[in-house]
Image (cartoon, rainbow, N blue to C red; front, side, top):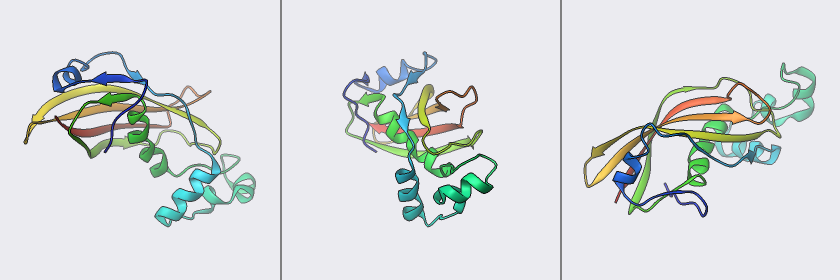
Length: 158
């Protein structure tokens, strides 16, 4: 996992990351989820369900009035949004996993999404590293309800 952003909160070491525990959320810029992105995700994963890749049928038959992004596409945006929100001066970083993921609202194709990241904890791990647990809320512009909430776990080696 590469984490680095041109105009983002910068963490020089594990202590700086640890100091973020309980702080205000770090908020990403908005990102558009367009049909091209959804189609590429369908190709990459083999998930060609019509509700994602057939806009005309989705307009006619889906309860959402049009095509929606895959839940796992929405989830997969978290590392990219984090990378545009923070910069960590590290030797290496990796995605370690996820806990308590929920898709709480559909992402209609064409939606603008952003993420709010709150550091829940930072603990020591082997080989001079730390594990960060992030509470992540993905929001859709114009909606009061989030589209996804998750606990995202990263490891950082300095």
